[in-house]
Length: 95
Image (cartoon, rainbow, N blue to C red):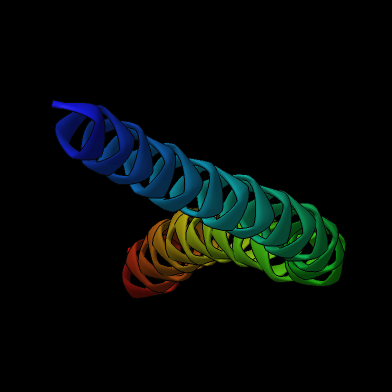
């Protein structure tokens, strides 16, 4: 019976050692993941800072498009006024 107790303690000790090694490996991986996540967060911050100007350009393009539409409307109104004035002047000359 003594040998069975020793064998049981030996197996239990082996299980404890294996669990401890696995726990240490998990902790090492968790620290590695945390370090990589921190690095990734810094890179994402740099990307965000570098791409803000792209979003500003898009806003500027929308504003420029609106200004162009306004200028086209002004040009159309000016053309209509010129045609109306020219048409009235032609009618007065004919009369």
